Image (spheres, rainbow, N blue to C red):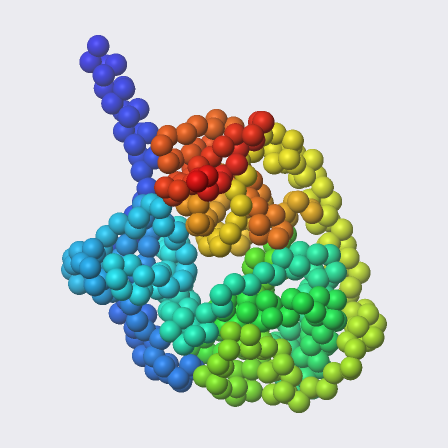
Length: 433
């Protein structure tokens, strides 16, 4: 009998060890990181943006939702320990790299990487601090939508532009000038096809691209090292199957690098729609044709357009194969429909993929909207390309008061919302008067 008790205890210990979430950050380590980030900001001390970027900052461990902050909140929710202010981040709130008010104080949040990585922690902190600067300076965009970047033609011109921008940042003199001109021609050709998206592109490239560039340049001591990081980031982004929600992080950073090399005064930016391409064009005195598409087609041959066609054909093949497996989950089987009114998303760029004309599948994400908070941990959800609707599979669907559950996801509804069943599907709607 004792032998069985010991054996069961052993199994319990194994399962506990397996399920336990490792928390690598301690108050002592957090204090060290805050000191290092403050020193990095002090080293720049306003040279790039006209202001020292260090400010109220919280590092958040996403799995356990633990907060480590560099200062107290106004309401005393966070508790001081070893010079660090700690607390629990509410389950119903979204974890994302952006400013938020917590306990009556405007902090900026930096989600911690899943494994301890000194460089990633510090760059994420700087990235988030720059977003705080944008918010305080009136440069935070209200919204933007660049879903057209998953259209075939937009992707072709974007990839050509990236190839030219890579040549530009890796060369100097006449080679750089020619590469910049080529990149701007490809950029112009794409924008001639999608003229209504120009401001949205600028907003995305300014908001996330400038944050990316700032975090890299602050954390690297030479432009050579910064250039290497940009190349690595471009390689990762280039391989993504969907660009609509992530291209701007690297795109704006590439143009920012070229502008910085020419002495551009970033502190003069006073709008959330600054066109970094136009700034680079003026700085390098680039002359473009009146209609870029007139020359972009022949110019594309110099950038091996055929290989890009093959990449995109393979992408479509992969999508069709995946659609065959996944389409029934979101279109033929019962689903939960949520209308998106003013959503805030939290996701990893590499965890999204296109589902042809139906929208984008997010493997894991957090969404906050007027109806409440949605967490998707596995199985995915489908977001329409116009960002108006979201679908969830209803397998193992169940309700408990304001909590709705399904395989791999759970939804916390606000008080004035409900779920109604229509046929086999479920719809989230505002309570009827």
